[in-house]
Length: 114
Image (tube, rainbow, N blue to C red; front, side, top):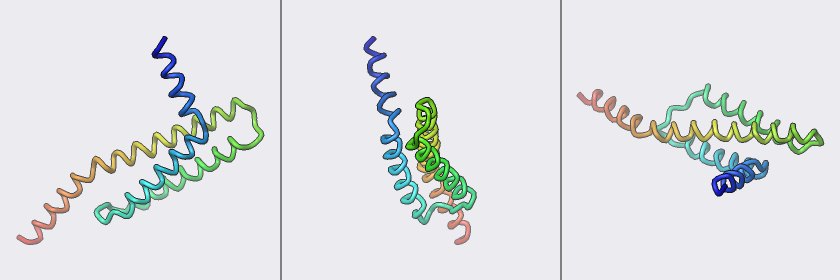
């Protein structure tokens, strides 16, 4: 019973569209900071994927704020949640790849010196 209460509070907290919008902006700030890192390889495909996710998120946000059926509002919030999870996964993956990229760069520079 105690577990149900905590999970209910967490799901209602994450089920708020306003919380999802705040999380999205925080992830966006981390994404911009990550893209400015000179060690990272800039990929046009990743940028296009993020732009598509941004447009989808904005569509879901505008759909949520319109006068639609409440069940569709819940689906819009769930879609925003999925996009936030997706962005968080790629941000986490990029952070985990950083040491390997640094090592690969150091190895490739040492080969040029020899």
